[in-house]
Length: 451
Image 1 (spheres, rainbow, N blue to C red):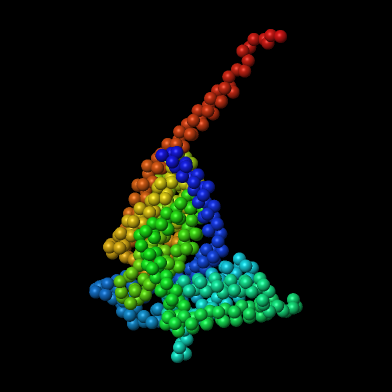
Image 2 (image 1 turned 90 degrees about the vertical axis):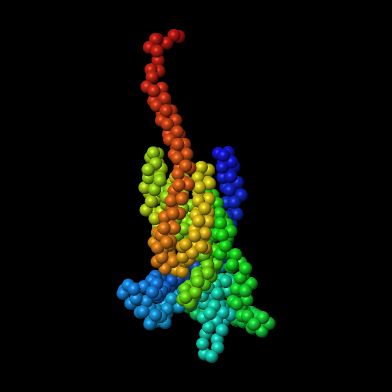
């Protein structure tokens, strides 16, 4: 088994790590990731409003406080929904600007100007104007893939035209702000004269505007992203990359974020309509059931390390517990270490996958409610799981159960690693004592040297 693990580590280091490194440095992956990170504060605050709008009480409750809260929410629903509608409800606007601004820095373009160009491009194809009103139908989850595609397209057009000097250049004496305004005039025209006719042609031939057509084309992929195989595959890739020392979370979340946000948006629409919540796999599911304490679900391992007989592991456990509660586990990953440590390969990779199966089954049979709110990834798992499901209590028990199973599965591998370190320490002490005795023994017999 040890030889197999060593060979697996070599394969990962020599073949997977270079590929993952290239993907992680891919400019579109980085831009999408940065775009979602930029929009995250607005979406978290908007999602938090759902807690006040839809309090976790039954309509048949007899508790006076709960009845008053439900009554207040029902009377002022439109007013309370405004912060949500102008944050989570228009998240594609923030994402579009964020993605384009990040990609602009790669091409050394002005991020603000490029972000505004992307925003205009998205509104051009995804915000139909009728009877003096702009439709917001595609500004939430339904338009997220359009926002990503249009942001990349608009930035690439701007970069292409500037690279080939197809811009209006003013003398150096002109202030930079004015110069940038004129520089982007031709890119704006280029985007309008390509995207808008495409949208009109698509609408006249299929009856669908661009975001509707994109969602229709991606519908099978979006549906597949909410299945157990998709969950297991994304977790497996993340864990394998992390084991190789590559930040797998950034790569996987950069790819999965559009699907997670589309699923979360659909869940929130269903919650507002009083319908059944449709989707399981969202960021809250990923953060609070699969990666408790960080990648590999290492928070239970941190508690086990505190009671280790080996001094180094005890120290790492003490250093890792508090950050692990907030899903930061680099002290354990690189201090124990787990990264490229063959002994921990099996539990590190497969514990989150086993917990994924447990949580998915429990959610699919409605033993645990589905996620309806976006939480920060640093939120401690039991609190975050309850918050994400509109303060339900069963997700808390689900988190503790996943922690228990993780700790149970880490235990034998930790004991094997602990024994290995203790044996190495014993050999090292024996060698030091032997060397000390050798240095203290008389170097001469006391007899005079013979010449």
